[in-house]
Image (cartoon, protein in one colour):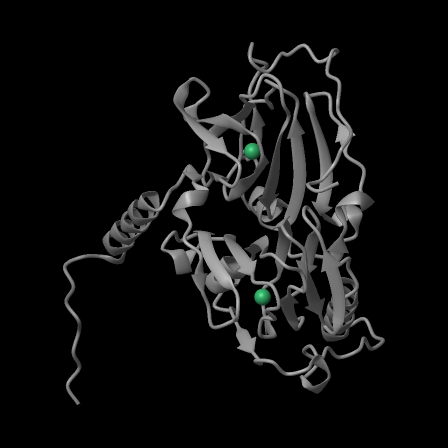
Length: 353
Ligand SMILES: [Fe+2]
Ligand SMILES: [Fe+2]
C-alpha cells in the first residue's frame, strides 16, 4: 500500500486563529441592548399556549447560557405536559393560572415565581376569565452548548402514567474514587430534587438597600431554590434613583415590571450610550460592558426583575480566570452618590391588591 501524506499549506495555528476570529465576529452581530415588548410577537404553539422570544435561538436572537421567553395561556386552556434536561424559572406578569410540577399543582398570581427543576414533568393552565401571561428563563442554551439538551413532550397524559425522573444509584460505603463519586452524585441529586418550587410574592420581604433601592428574592438559593444557578430578584428603584456603575460578563437581564428609565452601557465608564426602556421591555447586558440603570420617573418607583446564573457559570469563570477580575464596580461617580435619607417607601403591593 502506498503511503500518502496530506499537503496543507495552512497550519493548525492559522486555521485555529481564523476560526476564533470568525466565531467572535459572528457573536458580536447577535448582541442586543434592550428588547422592546412590541418587538416580541406572540404566536400560537403546538403546546397549547402563545409564545414569544425575547432572547434565544428560536427567536433568532442566539444566546450562550440563558434564554428569555414570554407565554400567554388563554382562559380555559391547558398546555401539553413536558420535561427537559435543563431547568427554568418563571415570573408571573399578568392574570392568574396554575403550573403542575411532578403532579403537584401550584396556583399563581402576578409577581409570583416558580422554579421548574430539570426532568420534572410540567404543564400550565388557566381557570380564570382573561389571559394569563408569564416570562420564562431557562438554562437550555448552556445544556445546548454541552450537547445535552433533551426535551420530551407527552401531550395530555396524566402525570401518574409518565416515567419517573432518571434513576440515580444509592451511595455505597468505601473510600475508593468510584464509591465516593456514587455517594457524591446521589447526595447532590437528593438535594437538587428537594428545592423550593413556588415563591408566592407576599411570602418574601422587600428590603431597603443602602443604594436607593429595595430588593426581594424571587428565585435564589438564599430562599431554598435548587436551580442550575438561575436566580431572580426584584429591584425597586426610588423616584429618580440609580444603582452603581459596574461591569461583569453577560448574560444578565432585567425585565421591566413597572415604570420607565434608561441604562448606560459602554466599553469604558465614560464611553457609551444611553438606552431608554419601559414596562414590558427586557434590558440585555450580554457581554463585559460598563452599565448603570436609572429610574427616570421623578415621582414614582420603578421595578426591574434581574435574572442571571452567576451562582454557577460566573463562579466557574472566576475560578478558571483568576486573577482576572470579573466583577467591577466603578469609583463612586456623582450620579451614584445620592441623597437617600428622604426616601419614603410606599407599601409594597402587587397589581390588583
Ligand atoms: Fe418547560
Ligand atoms: Fe449588572
